[in-house]
Image 1 (cartoon, rainbow, N blue to C red):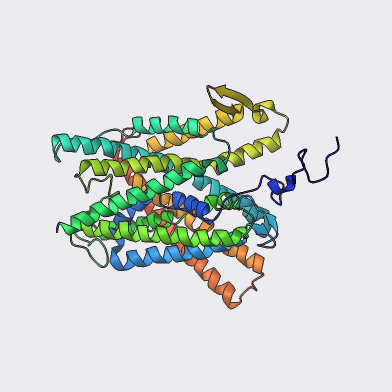
Image 2: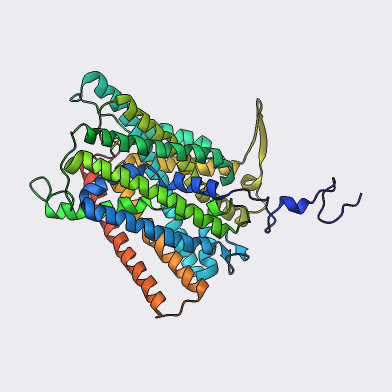
Length: 472
């Protein structure tokens, strides 16, 4: 039987089911893209912003948060314009950030981008493992303090919780495609807003009760408890904490690759950038400002796990449950691009290998799924390694600050600016070129000082605690 070109056996237009690149038609929109952005951006790092605010003070803290957010909206819009090459509206799709960098900037920049991007993704999954264990320990401590009193000895090892989280992620990591994570991402986004609101609400309750601590315009005061050198190092680390909170460049093209083709993906993503980052900034200012106002110089590194709050213990525990649920989803949202790039590379290297490419359909009751041997083994090993690293360095603030420092300048500022210059053919030494390069250089300095401050904090903690013996 002959089938008319462009139609299936039932006479329907089969092309209607495909996008311009021959793939199944994408159905994402501004709302789903915003959900993904919120899931990735409003992470547990938001709960460290009160500590960052305490180091910077009201003037610098608010200024830095708004400045970082404004830079992020601008540069993420530049990234959105580079999703297609060379025409932002009708050009060829770039499925990954690395592809866009290669298309606009060439091979050497492509390699540099890959090292930074996937190194950052790997680091974030380690950070999420640390965050999860910290929240699970906090739940146990909240119950302990409630039963035994606030002066009781309630310290527990993070290791069992990291191992449990790792085992769960081994199972979830077998999900092969990012687009299948929509519901997981939606739940994670909702819980992220939930724990941010709980943290802010508990801080507000402290203020309303008249128990808030004194705050300063320029942050924690140098004195017997804080040397001038330590003050500077803490300020550097605080910049890293805020920089991390602005970051989702590692998955921006994965998000864009879920969007329908009309309106153009770049226009939809720009709206999602504005909505997501605006929501992010509001939450940042609420959590950071209210937390600092509640605890002053003694603001804990994480307002829900540092036990600035003891009661109501059930609400503190609920906030940490929300963190747990969010981390489960966010781990996979960020790990999927890393999984995919390795598996694509293996497929290119060994296209005829059954071990790498063959899928085995399996039915478990009413559930039908397929597994792949290479995916099973490699993703399992990856999660195990991430868990071991987290167990060796379970330092919440310092590790998050290092991740923020590593990714902020190259991924959020440098590559977007350079791609924009190449795309728009901005003349060298023109006013626009000079302004963009100055912005890039200033952000480079911020990343350097934040990295130095966080590395110093990690090294101090490693000397203080034995490997794998840390108790919170």
